[in-house]
Image (cartoon, rainbow, N blue to C red; front, side):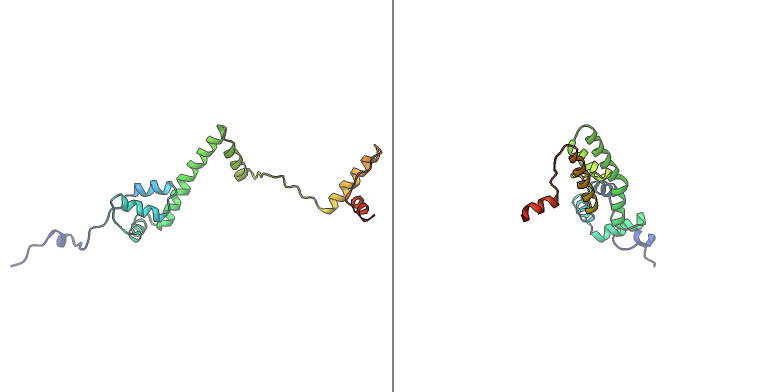
Amino acid sequence: MAKAKSAKEKSGKTGRPRIKINFELIDTLAESFCTPDEIVKAVNAAGTKCSYTTVERRVKSSKSMTFGEYVEEKRTGVAKPKLRKAQLDAALKGNATLLIFLGKQYLGQSDAPQAEINTTDEQEFEEALTHAASFWGEEIKTKENAKEETTE
């Protein structure tokens, strides 16, 4: 007499059942700039006991990208624009520190002016200054005059 087949034998599946991964939790954590390691620890703390490799395989099979790529996509596609908007809103409400920071990041501003003077420009400037001072009968101390005084 033939044995009755169990439910597993009928379905053709054997082994452990697949661990269900909470992608909503992963998305939320990735959007909060958590690292992939931190995300896996949080998934485990939430009750889904699995390894980093398991999460990586599940993301690859369901999202067609690596776990790292998926996390980065959530950061750049969702989290960074939200953060930029929040920073801009805070800056426009009068947060001077954020205004300075955003000015440096996006407008190329800096703390100190960056004037580059080469020796030719400096010489031309001294000549023009000396010429202008001669109208008032003044003598301007230039680098050359200062050198001459120190050698005497």
